[in-house]
Image 1 (cartoon, helix red, strand yellow):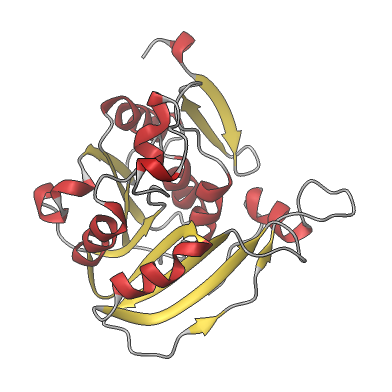
Image 2 (spheres, helix red, strand yellow):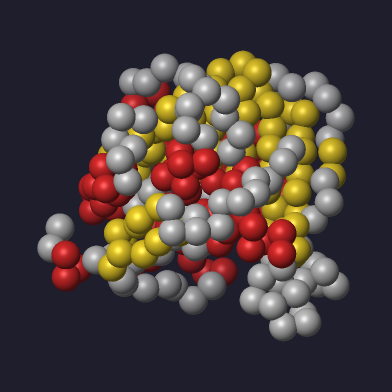
Length: 247
């Protein structure tokens, strides 16, 4: 891709270089939190469907240097950028990207099951629920098959005893739990709130395929401090790669 068509940004405290289109969906806070929630062990294989240009994928690979990562992205331009970004960051030996569509199901990829799946599914199923985003961003915001397709893909992609980690809108929590059950359980949920005195806008949900442990509601992650700081100390440490989201 022509260098004039992309910008280069640095994430994870400058440790990851990320080339992305200025008018497309750009990796942000959700990608950073998803990467921080990845706790893959050395040798484990992690899949991210809908990886975009690799914002979460590459940050997670940098955080977890012993793990192996696979990204799937249906947009050919974003998939090519993700592969280029893996090489740019010296991660091509551990990070692979293929073009594929969640709608087609996991079996269409012809890949063995993974130890972990992490995803940031598109937030909306129905175009009538919000003003349509820019065409270049619509694929990241609108899920043609909705959460049903994404949760079904994740359940097929992960081995028994493996983990599924999703970040999504807090008001879809009930739907996420219903769609992942009964094939997955041992849910652990971390709310993400903009301020300590505000309702959570996001949830990060961790489930174990065939898990049977009781649901656990973890303390919330508070992103901002009303006293004037751009981010809370905890959020800043996570964004810089100095802390992880423990489960």
